[in-house]
Length: 212
Image (cartoon, rainbow, N blue to C red):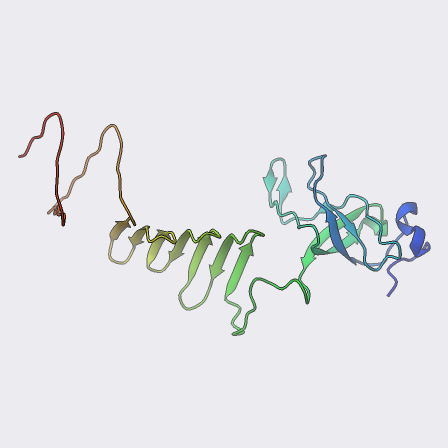
């Protein structure tokens, strides 16, 4: 279907022609020196496939130094609309997956439990509404922050972790190599009992050591 209504395809972009509906495009530039978060695209269906005018990004929220900032990558497929059909005023209204660029999740079980934001580097924010509900922030190197029915877990790929067990009321800190606490003043208080043990040497040092 030819999206252009009023002028020849080969001159439509330069002359500010008009288009019906929305159009498929591919991002060709995403560095906007004006700081307006705009991109340029190329239209595969256009004969010359020339670069578009600057296209503003539609977002769920925007305002002065606030809002959703998610610029598409160069080469991403997007959906473009035009102000009053004028090709000189394009807007990016959404991004599209396709046969080559797959979605980060497949919904293979048909339950549609996963919502996810995944970046180019592989950092992920996942909302899982499945049987074991969780929200997880995960870096590409394996560091994770997980919120679930059990509590909160911060861990890394080396085996270090901080686990807050909401059901048992316990907090467990585990370090793969060593654990250090440093502050001008540190107080540790147990309302019932305190156990201190070491498989090796146990040392206490200070200008004054008081045992009561």
